[in-house]
Amino acid sequence: MIYLDHAATSWPKPPGVAAAMADFLATAGGNPGRSGHRLSIAAGRIVYDVREALAEWFGVADPMRVLFAANGTHALNVAIQGLLRPGQRVVTGGMEHNSVMRPLRHLQQQGVRVDVVPAAADGSLAPADFAVALHRGADLVVVNHASNVTGTIADVAAIARPAHAAGALLLVDAAQTAGVLPIDLRALGVDLLAFTGHKGLLGPPGTGGLVLADGFDRTRLEPLMRGGTGSGSEHEYQPADLPDRHESGTPNGVGIAGLGAGLAWLRERGLGAVREHELQLCRRLREGLAAIPGVRLFGPLEAESCVAVVSFVLEGRSVGEVGHRLDEQHSVLCRVGLHCAPAAHRSIGTFPAGTVRLAPGPFVTMAQIDTVVAAVAEIASS
Ligand SMILES: Cc1ncc(COP(=O)(O)O)c(C=O)c1O
Image (cartoon, rainbow, N blue to C red; front, side, top):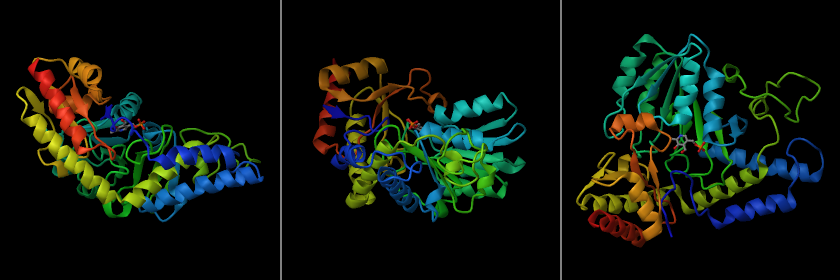
């Protein structure tokens, strides 16, 4: 079996991930921050250690500014619904996932103005177009750091400048880049960053979070959900402190322990080494696919401009047929269709059929890529 669906969720996970999760259940199964006994304290320590590791990873001094969430979608909703009010204006790009577009369209119906800066056919966004769109001012800019359809990486630092000049906050959807590209909120000028734990960071499903930059005024973010936090229990109002204000209910300690192990593996292996491996895989994949008659590739030509996502269509074949045959006849697992991002497919001209998406990860080998290219060639010729 060749797993090329890392853009949906990474698999397999590094061996330490399952071990850390089992260990949490066996030795630290208490409810973090709730009770004062040893199992609760042990659980709280693990959750804090991972929070601290993530703060360092994303260039944030205060670990309490890492807010855990159930996934990237949850984190984006905490930010979008927590910041925007009727009458305000948000500017976004043409490559967004429905995790951004659906909350935005929902808020649009309640009086938030939503403007979309178009993307080019290769999925790239021109910072100058953001500058033009932001001339009239805005409250928030939301932008996808890298597309889950074409892999195209956005120049977030260049978008941050006009966003801040217009008085807007910058929220980045790092679902496809956390654990893939180096991310430093300070260096990029990002105010809020939503990440998912189960893709590039190699943690289990059920993990993700929102990171608030050190300089971000946290009082601007209203909680999406309210409830028990283990702190200030004498009050019936939501506490003001971070992270509790945005973390009601028992956290996913098991998943967070696994996420910590995924992050530890990445640190040990080195982000640069993993990125270089994936770049080599993608170069080979793109070159191999480009040589097959009838294949049309999407996204920028240079692998360096992309994360490890390669989208294509095959002339005369539906994407469903290609995906089915890759799975059934060649044991190649990938994703076909719209990838929850209809706006991105409209931008690159593949709506409504979508594309076949091949997304390699750290444990995929060059020999497997050659097998996949041969499989697509066989499907194209028969
Ligand atoms: C660009 C992008 N944003 C957001 C998400 C949502 O992440 P999650 O599946 O963790 O909710 C995804 C997941 O595919 C994504 O690719």
